[in-house]
Amino acid sequence: MANIRSQIKRNRQNEKRRLRNKAVRSEVRTRTKRALAAAETGAENADELLRLTVKRIDKAAAKGVIHKNTAARRKARLMRRIAAARTGQA
Image 1 (cartoon, rainbow, N blue to C red):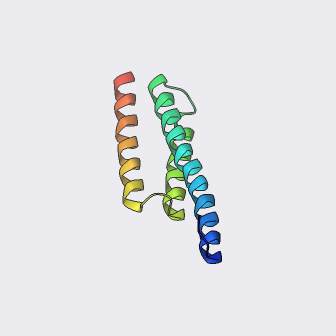
Image 2: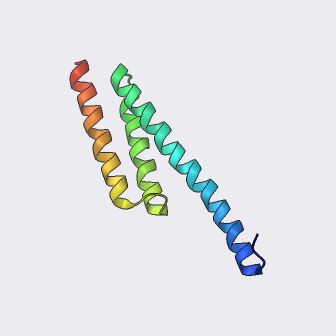
Image 3: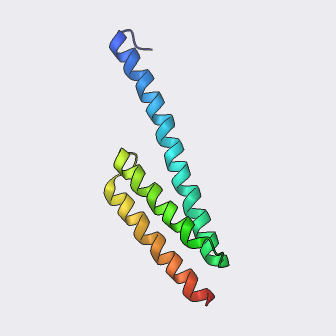
């Protein structure tokens, strides 16, 4: 345990940020899975789910939760997988 007051505060801030970042990363993964599942089943709200997923990934990158290149890579992979699911279904 830290003895210095500034380090105690820093530890509190780091823990808060860690929990917030964990929630954001979890939400990005959940939305990605939902968008993929919707595209594979051919649900009519698949486009909306994809839009919300991309929006959430961009937001996470803007907040610094994930790196901007990581966000770009995730979006590219997501688009490729959804395009493949749509062509495989049609």
